[in-house]
Amino acid sequence: MFLKNSKKIAYTAILSALGLGFLMLGTFLPLSFVPFLAASLLLYYLFEKCGIIFGLLSGVTVSLLSLLFLGGASIAEVIPYMVLFAPHAFATFFLNKLNLNNKVLKYFIRYIILLPLFNISLYAIFTMATYILFNMNAFVDIVGNYYVLAIIMNIVFILYDQTFFYIYRQLVKSRIFR
Image (cartoon, rainbow, N blue to C red; front, side, top):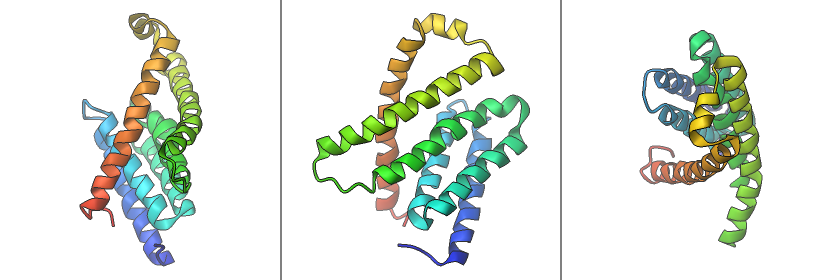
């Protein structure tokens, strides 16, 4: 279901503003992944409703405006959205377009594509956090080493991906997202 261009522009503006609001709210909440999840759900909905161009425009707009408005010390709140959550919404939009009847094959292909993308994002976030923001050595010493952290985070990512679509289906079912 595609809309006319003026409606697409309005949807993009409104959902981008909401996504930016969620990211700004995330700087004050202790559970900072919840605003990222909400902003990512809005971005995925925009991909579904308006198409790739408007979704990409919204993702870039939210990322740049959040850097502009939050900036400085809150850059740690923006980097995960830019590197992990927005690309996840983009990749899953394309992966859900695959019409596969076999559920095992569908999940296999999904995670063969998503897990390497996640690991690249995780390494980028880890590297930026280590060398730009703060020293992660104490955190890595608690966990063991980077590879143990990566294994744990891969499991968390799979749970996040399943939760993402469960919430999205519930929002569609309850007619919040139409």
